[in-house]
Image 1 (tube, rainbow, N blue to C red):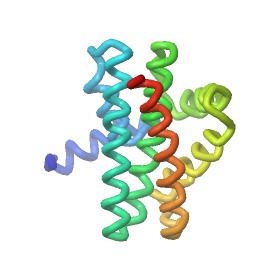
Image 2 (cartoon, rainbow, N blue to C red):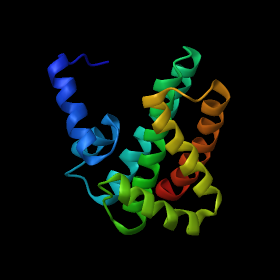
Image 3 (cartoon, rainbow, N blue to C red):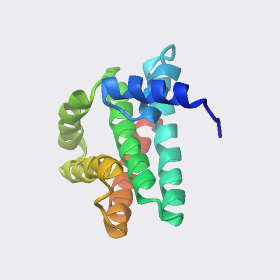
Length: 156
């Protein structure tokens, strides 16, 4: 785990917030800039899988807010990975993610819309803390299905 000075962490959160994604998504974007789209898609999926694991750990600690944000980040990175894999497209904003999830839903199935809505509620929960444990657990299961499905596509 890296420990950053508070001022750098605040700057990082601010930069990420300007574009809409979580800090993890923002860093994945920055770190993968020089990679070709296929490798970038694979890195996004690797991070999505790790975020799912972190969400499970946060659930064990009963930190529903942190688990929620990890779930959201995993879902968003799965959608981004799919866009890179499918058409070498970089999704930069929350708005682009919303639109692109419809393409993913058309190709993978309508269930993707439900996953997206649950994941978005987790993003909101990170800020407002309204979801209960069962909501977070269900969101984790749904997002895990999406990530695994995208893994099968991206990694072939």
